[in-house]
Amino acid sequence: MATTWAFPPSSIPDLAVIDLVPDGGDKLQEFFEVNPFYFLAVHGQPAQPREAHEEIAEDPPSGWPFTRKYVLGYQGPDGHLAAMAHVISDLLAKGVWHVATFIVETARHGTGDSQALYQSLENWAKDQGAQWMRLGVVQGHTRAESFWLARGYRQVASRQGVEMGLKVNDLRVMVKPLHNQALSEYYAIVERDRPPSTNAA
Image (cartoon, rainbow, N blue to C red; front, side, top):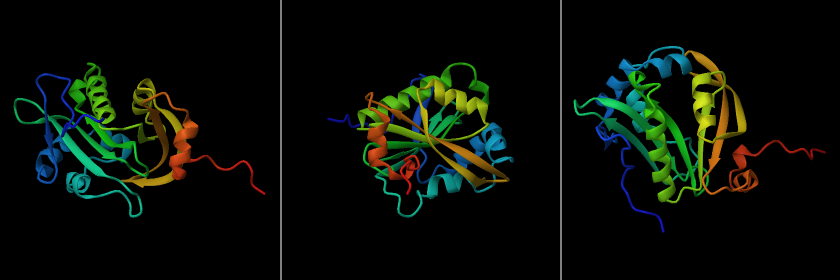
């Protein structure tokens, strides 16, 4: 039976996990603006004025089933965010948890905090019934690609020509099984990510 925790515990003692939905837009926008690394790498420009509002308010595309979206902040003693995570439960299929956005402040890069915060997030999702973790990473964003590969994610699909800010990116769709399942089990439940058929007539 899944453990019922509203939000993941923080793996870093001086950070508290807070819910940014629906009223955390100003706090999240400030975090985005003072930590532009992600947006410059992925969008080719700093965070735009309504970036945080869209992160909080927008749901997955129409026709994509899901159970709940979480937009979480990791808040320090001074009230400012040190990290954020946007996670969607049961996206496309029951048991598939999607990491839409995960950003740790630039000052903490290289400290091990990113790995610790992500691991607590994954453990929490698993306790809630997650069977698979899923995400998309921009091809060529080597720091992010290396981070997710080191966490045990593997590519299952790709999307070409995705407009993101000023850039048009190719995305690597990556998945991590949480119970040593074969990828064939994932493909059985997420049609969107299945490889092209090799049995074309």
